[in-house]
Length: 497
Image (cartoon, rainbow, N blue to C red):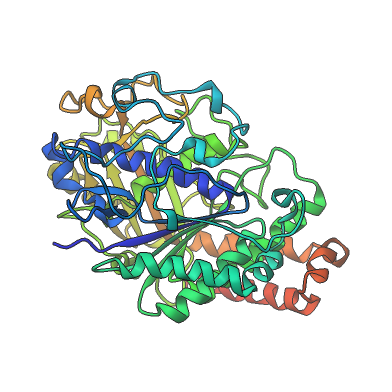
């Protein structure tokens, strides 16, 4: 079956950090594709990766990454690929990466260099070479230190309304779409609490106009903050309200993701096995979210069995205008699952990564992905039966894969010594490094309506004097009042009746 290509667009620093770690994890199974029958049978790398002309081996990400910083001196690989004699070029270390042999065989995968947010650019985390058209900067952002000042949704809208920026990005998108044989849609990761929310909104409008038959799955991302002054909190919440409105209008489906609960409590998300996790570190939070995405997107790359197109992906989970879905994950998932009791124990570890949503018990429909578990056919029957017991009124789609997630530098030292790393001897660390079971879920749930109502409540508490920057950048007070009314309308879509 021919691959159905997906273009990933990353907008902003946090999204690019997450993307870098996700692309790294993508490449490890690809490296061993001609050595492991299991991996080769389960995953088609060409859905997310581009291919060489002389050989159909996947080589670099099908990616458009947009940032403020420039110039970005990434490792670049041109369209013409020089393949090695063995044809193994799936994973090409970047300029900051160790050699290939060291990368694969290393067990010590943590790096003190990245223990906080002090890496210079997200490119330092990336192990892939990129096509030149994968890179873009926003040239119309003004200011000596634009990273600190590019905080408003309306700034992003105004920035890409400039003809040269928008036209350049549009040409880059067109390049990746036109080189694809069976292009199916877009996967968009973007920083939603600053100006990149506005950039994403304009791009979604463009995509809807130019590629109306293609699906768009968006993941608005919110980095966690240990403290946030009231003025900045008001800006973040207002940005979020405007982003939600744009996503309901122009995306096919979206899932807000953060380790920060944002507006509903003071407690960050907890993962029982990630003992050293610092949610406020965009490097560490990025690794958690990248792992969740690596799990959730696996069915889009499956060669058989649980194969999904992006259209299937969206239509299964959205109905009656309910485009917002929640996301959950377990990292790592207990791999000794053999009966209903152990399955119940494993599911206790599942954590919501959607702001203001604690659980997903009241769902209309959901897709659950289980990775790294042997005897997939037996486990498929077990988990399908278990799902019917757990959620009697919920339509649940379970996707089970033997391929686990894999650790690759510079993944944080979260659970390297955990007993929950996969012990299946058929997976050799000498081939693809340490690996672990994961769970990821997408849920269309009543909880999303509660979350939107909480958001409306918090937006209604914001006084006009806290939003002067928005007004001076082009928005009017009536625009924000209308936005709040629409948030309530979206929340009503999720009422139980």
